Length: 142
Image (tube, rainbow, N blue to C red):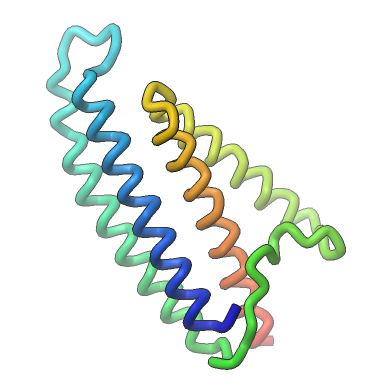
């Protein structure tokens, strides 16, 4: 995929992931925390939404800035992290951490069913795209 198409797809995926986070946490906030006597802690959730928006803005700007070194005609392989011919210990570690983050994301909203799965899967896909983007930027710098 060409550089700017890749970046746009990555941004859209990050926005989808952020939207799923807000939606799943809103649904969880409506149900309340099981077993908790004081539900006032749920009022902190909108603050998390604002923090998530700031993180998404910083993430997308950082990827745009790091991509300045990538040639405009460069084709970025979408599934760079999954290529078995170049498995390194760092790549295996990255995949393990990504899997653990996806598991945590699912368990965070496990009561929300399909929304929890969608949040976890979009987060994992975003991690794979970020890996491919960073690999392409690193290759052009060296």
